[in-house]
Length: 294
Length: 188
Image (cartoon, rainbow over all chains, first blue to last red; front, side, top):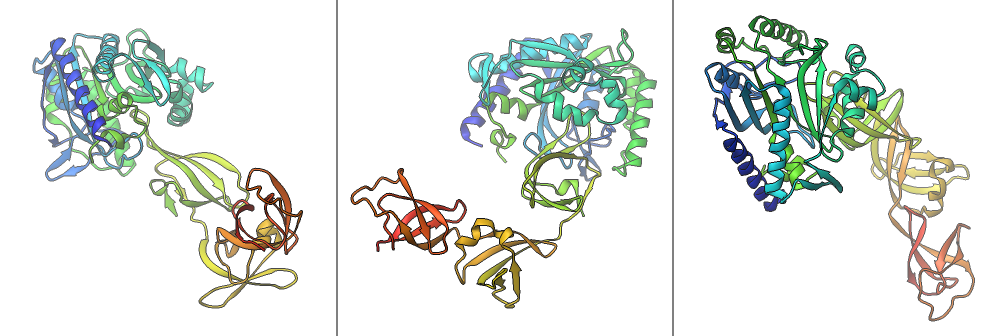
């Protein structure tokens, strides 16, 4: 870490906020300590007295959608137990934003502009250099997950998902090829990996989900939000079962989130971005430690 | 047994009855997916490299590896004999294990041993040793260039490359990691 990177990070945070204000998003603040995290197969919350530290503000922000918030973002800390490495910290800064009535492709285009705006503020231009490689943030590519697996791993994404090699191929073969000289949106995940996204109406084998990459680094995850209460509860039930089988921490059910689903969450899209990683890209830093004061 | 979360650079592990050392390590976690521990490693006996990715539930064997310091004592005609500075326990090492390092062994040199199942797989000598040049072409007076070299023999017959100004009888310093001349210590 050096002070210069902290100043760049500060400029980036200002640019991100200003971009949201300019597009009529307001900044929301939601609790960091929560009674019930969303049950995820591979994310473990840190326990706090009488609850948990949030792994993301997702459920609180979806309740805000149901309550009539149309467009908003939250910029704050989240915690994921046991995650530490060159691109991970247990405590990290997350940026999460939602827009009612936007589909997931519109949110992708918006996200590309958001990153370019941050680059203009920090680097003076959307043409940046990361670890010796020229990257143009105005150069935006869309590739489906299945296309990417066929192209870079020589196997269909559905087959990889079925035989258990999906994650390993993602890390070793697919991710290094994404965002090599610009921004890549990896879109339409196999339905089994929908997480909290809705299935595509055009092709129910895939879900309305994307992840965004620059220089092989995953920066964000987005959903065309699942707003069907019954389907959402069914997926959570499956996740609770998986967690129990794996001996992971039991979580209470998020009753207030279920109530919001039943009242009705509007059709919407939402995205979560790893802010430390975006700072790595804009500061040309290969390790997350270089853009944080720890 | 190690679990995957113990993996890190420099850790020694056992795979299929061979010791490996992790030379590069990265914690990975693709979006919403499982944590993966990517390792690049080197076989500690053959030097062969490979990559391997572990999952959080994987268990990894611990190799029977021990590190200790031993003094070089003597050559018994077949083996190089080292002894433990505390227990005086002796250990025989074959010429094959030592390779060219055998030429740089000095009596009483303290060497670092890595043992796998009790057998030495890596022996590190003191970084620099001093040896006398017993045979070389006469030196060229005044030529202090070190980039032009000529062959020179040590008292044990091993041949190294030395600068032109080195004479028979000079004492030189040799880097045991590379087996190369480092500098002149004493003129004959």
